[in-house]
Image 1 (cartoon, rainbow, N blue to C red):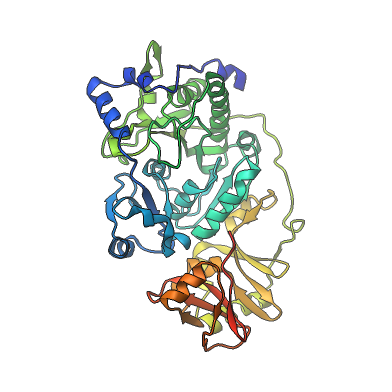
Image 2 (cartoon, rainbow, N blue to C red):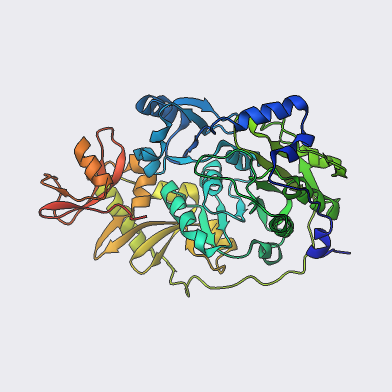
Length: 491
């Protein structure tokens, strides 16, 4: 007989929190000493390279020299670096502004790396996605092929998620804002992969200066715990048989980590399989199976408890779960809104040829190979044209989304103007109608100013691709009679 979420909650275990001493019983004396020493040191900043925009070898050969960084690779993430030396420059570079890398604690790079290679065009659900760090990681790992439903239940957090995905240049994503608890009944046995980076207490024991620890009451922890189990059950129901779920938190509190996994493992003993991630972690980081007098299922040890002293990161927890066989849920119809009602329509053949021709003739950029390689379709809404994954239209055409795919440009009368996101993502292919700015001009431009007294060899009214003296794309500009208007997005 299927148990309710309230029944599952009775399986959960709680312990006192917010004191380092609470973790002493989980470690040997030597390990606890290592933990104490690690959290006394500043947390190294880290970045993850956007492999959709630049290859790792090029980034590694140029950025450390350019900015004076000492780079330490993140052992479990090929595209991740921990940085020492001139780290204050990390958030002020052109590369960061244009989405060539994402600033992220190294521990948070683990979840996306835990998944096995998926089908070529997988369906992925990121259930609690904002602000988007792990979503951008998934998009890069999938080479932007397939669909990622990036959901966050808080409408107030969607703006940050949307901005980060636009800056990253992802086309495979669609944004939604629904309670994550509903996806299991709306889309049972559907997704190839589900990532649940669950809302948690944030008790990672070691944080960057900008993220201060706070007191978490036992009442709040119990509320978090109840929701975490509901969300994980929904994630498990939503993934298809043979698919994988990654459950992660940025807390080391066992009642939000091992106890949550233990509850679902006991509820689905034949279907809920925890898989080893030894291939991902060179230094073992097993979860605990005992917390004082409390014992968890032995398989819980296959999950990852990333103590700060193991990889010089903040504390983190993650588990890789395989679904063996379909689950049965009560089911419910998801919300519906057709693309027509949302104002979208398929771009007809003649306008599509015109878009392709204008981009090729003006900017020497060929759109067609990108559409074919990523399996995209072009949709139009008003004067705007979007590239949208075919998989999204096949499986979620009527599911209401806040944003889908990428805006690739807009019609201004008979002229098609490519979007900032399109040029930034494929800037190396936009070799036509390009203009180089000097150092002082670049500063003015990046501060949002227009350029005056510049002799640009393109017609008044045209949109030019601007670069610095290292050929790095820094934005679009509109040529006017006495100035170049700054068209950088205001986000």
